[in-house]
Image (tube, rainbow, N blue to C red; front, side, top):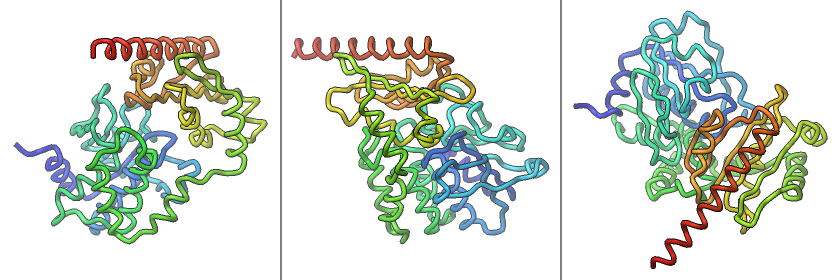
Length: 326
């Protein structure tokens, strides 16, 4: 029986038109996997029509740009969605209008969709999976310098520059192979790391306004008035999400960002406790230690923070029990 990678390759070979999607509000891994795959296919099958779609890339223009695709191009096309666990988060709702739909993702497969589904929750990133696909069929799939740059960016982005627990020996091996393709990795790393002056100012605000408890649960609320004061839009707040984790006594935290529609976007991070269980209760999901959710108002914000507090307290109690048994 053919492997899922072989099935995906066969589907790619069978279609002359391929349209690739990713999730809304893209991060480097979304673009790295989506456009990295597109560049692999362009280098491998120059006769095929390959498209990358999904609207604005919100500050990541140095990585890639999207294309406009007419509705009729979906007829008889292969559609691939990368790095998107839940179908409502796919950027551009036409993703289901093709002839065949493939899902490639590294998030928990809580909502299976697509005709072919390849999910690997052990991968550091969806970009790592795209590299695995390409390296699995070296006689057929070719990595260009641009494909390698994009895939590397996605891996660096989702591993926090190889600092997060999802980084494995295989991740580093893949990254090392990609560096052989001749892109300017130093420049790319600077682009991924650097922030604007106004985001730097917001970083100071975040450090000064972290609320935390004795168990290491923490939160930062960014109301619309604060966002306006610093001239910040939601997409620019991604850079401040890791900041609470740099404090030694903070274990798990949430950043609540007020949206123009009135609700709060919730970014959840953890150094130990599994926090995607909380995300799933609040219209979200994601990885065990990095998830996202939504809170309709400050009352739900309060509930989420209380759940983080309870989770951290339980985590330390369990750790203490383990130590006592040893």
